[in-house]
Structure formats: structure tokens, C-alpha cells
Length: 125
Image (cartoon, rainbow, N blue to C red; front, top):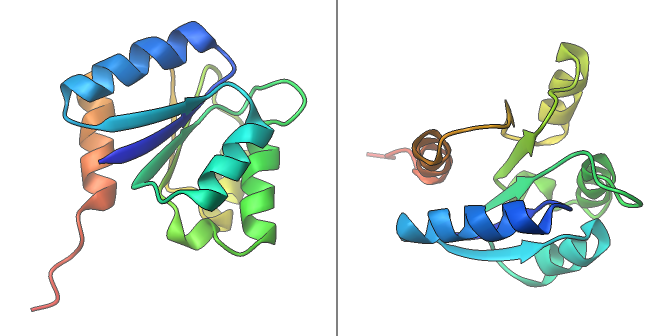
């Protein structure tokens, strides 16, 4: 599975990408929301792991830009953040196209389960 991980904490993105690779995923990382937006628009990812609390260009800015250009529905976005927003803010993000919001810390096993569940295509037979 090809994943884009976006978080301003470079140490966290490095560690998580190595853990994801142990689960047979490939992981591109960005510590900058604007750079990540360009990556998301020019590459195909099976999932995007997104932090909300980033300087200058936040996770919410990233989500809003994907909505604006009309591609959010084709993305599997997992918001992984240190402090969950209010229930209303979570519902607003989900209504925009975010698949799930989870709070750090999270075990790699649970995150992998979420990733797998988001990319399993339902049977049409």
C-alpha cells in the first residue's frame, strides 16, 4: 500500500514510515502541508495520514484544498492528531470526505488495521 504521511514532526514521520514499511507499505513523507498538497495532487496514494496541527498550512487547510479541487472523495484520509477536535469538527471533516479521525498515540497494529479496512474493496458479486 502506498501511503502519504503528513506531519510537521520530522522524527514522528520518520519513525512511523519505518514501522509502516515493516507492514509492507511504502511511505512518502512531508513535514509541510503545502508540499504535501502538491504530492497528493501529482501522485496516487492508497491512503493519506494527516496531522491537523501544523504551522502555516494546517491539516484543515489541506482538506479544504482537496475539497476545492474536487479530489477529496477519491482519497482515503486518516486524520491522526495529538488532540482530537470536537465531535462537531470531526463530523464536519467526515462530511468533507475524511474517512476517520484518531488520536495519537496509536499502535502500529491498530493503524495498519485501519489502513487495510479503508482499502478493501467491497465485493460486487
